[in-house]
Image 1: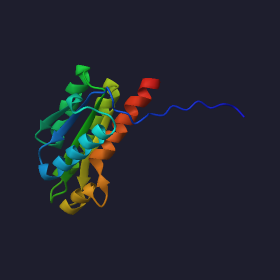
Image 2: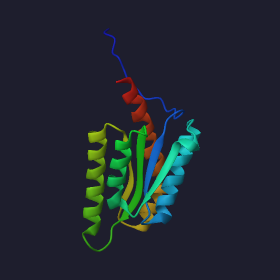
Image 3: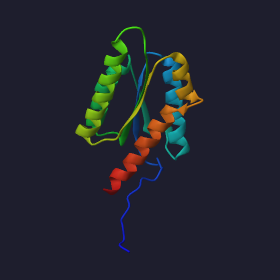
Amino acid sequence: MLHVSTIEGQLDAKGLKFALVAGRFNDFITERLVGGAVDYLVRHGGDRADLTIVRVPGAFEIPLAAKKLAASGKYHGIICLGAVIRGSTPHFDFVASECAKGLAHVMLDANVPVGFGVLTVDNLEQAIERAGSKAGNKGVEAASAVLEMVRVLEQI
């Protein structure tokens, strides 16, 4: 049988620097996401001194801050956290879509892993469920994805 080489990222944050970009809008939810991400990175060997939290007004502003952080060359990965909750107007669709597209562009243009921990939900109950309740903590998931991608890219 032929040997197949496999590249996988180890979940070890020791020696890595991360930026977390957090939208202040819906901060009751966002703070839970930030707490989950920070806790995850520390539990996986990261040092709090190597974490920088950047607060922005809301999800729409997250991509610009992430772009600037990625361009700085100071961080191995960027974890973006926020909460967009659907209302009665199309505003939700524009904000959620532009945030997601903007962060994808940042990651691909800068070659820096960017985690999408921005909740896009229909109501407050769904947001609470995804910020540490029934559906886990999406801040943890975003931090985990970024950490794994940093370690994968080191090997490619």
